Image: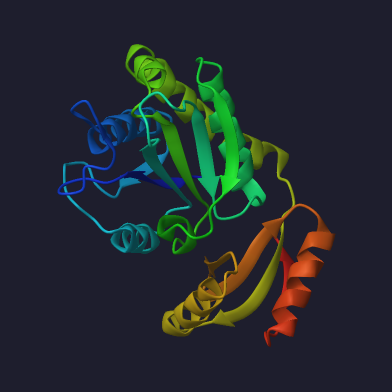
Length: 254
């Protein structure tokens, strides 16, 4: 399967993100995004970007760009910050929820960075983040160390090429596992529409209620589905929640 991945360099333009001793988050994220993208492209991935220059986009604009691109995955790069310099250090990956292939990819990216010496904070759920909540495809946000940590900055700079390669290989490795092993994911479908507008309405309604919903286009139908579960029991629980909320549902497999 040929994959398309949307890479997002956090912040940009008038929004520098976190700043430390003249170092700006928006610059680090763009540099890392482009480096990872080049490696993915060299390995046959169709890579698209929210930005390749120093421009400002709201989180909603970033999600809209991703949704309109038809990408299979959305990966956003950021750098963390703490109230005081050198208070914390480490890397973490944020997800809307811990389910499906995005969780495997997040864990692989975290492990790859840990091998370079970064402290592994973990994979965390952050359903309130717009770029994770509003994107229709599996989405990840990578916090590539604390920008006000001298330890993390040293690793970021001295092992930059290894870091970009490690992240890209973690992504590729996850996709290869998905292709070769073909795990079955159970999803809960709430509707199938020929009109994209109707599908979008249901999608945003579900997202506003906190459901991990997305749209899958198959042939001439836009299918609104929720979750991607390895265990059928988890899909059944989600189905019951949706039915209690008034939706007509159907459990489908990938």
